[in-house]
Image 1 (cartoon, helix red, strand yellow):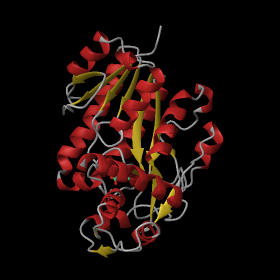
Image 2: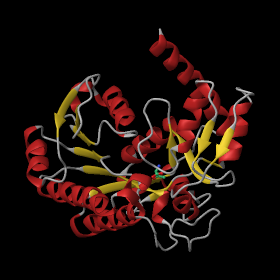
Image 3: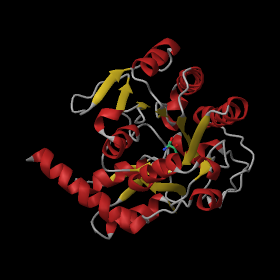
Length: 317
Ligand code: AKB
């Protein structure tokens, strides 16, 4: 019998690109995309699902014989600081519902997205070790750190095969930024392609770990497809790709758009960025299931700009 995959948050920044990749890989009929928002352009099986409601999740799992879940629904860091209690509720209640419904209905595998936001200001900024203790200062980081522990708990206690990645900032041309601190980078590319200067909400030296969408999706699927005996970290794996500051990003964009300029007006998101690592150590992911990124700042910039130019040409046609 083929696996039946459920995705929550399927219209989100990462969820929508992941949904298309999973449809391509496992067959459009074997993927059920769910969200609380509807996207008129969506192709495939879609249902409304409010993951804060346990009964609705259980109904969908039973109704569609779901065997794998990618739980992508979440509120990101910057939006999280605007609504702390709601963020805790959305990020944690939904995940506990997913874990419990999966356990009770014999779902085989779950993917849980965590983040570099789980580390706090106390952690070493460069090559932050996988197992450094977690003391996040944002509600988003707190929610993801606690989710990681719940993932580990369900694996130890019930043998539920939950797998997770600590994503750096994900940059992609396919979707709009989703309320994160690293999303300035996505916006900067859009402004450059529209021949506009960009006002950045971080200062020019704020280096953060980043990853191109293609690599982030590939890492997710590779982790989920790895043989179970290779998965040794049951909280969440660090995955690294590149790190850069807004100034370095501006310089990379200027190679293609020489007139492009970044203007710096740091706001509350500067504090969030200051509490995060500049780069993380992903040796365990590399050793356990052979993780290796393909893109760097230069190749990502060329690809982003190529795709965004096509997008804006089509939109304006
Ligand atoms: C955010 O900025 O909130 C996210 C993240 C790093 O998890 N992109």
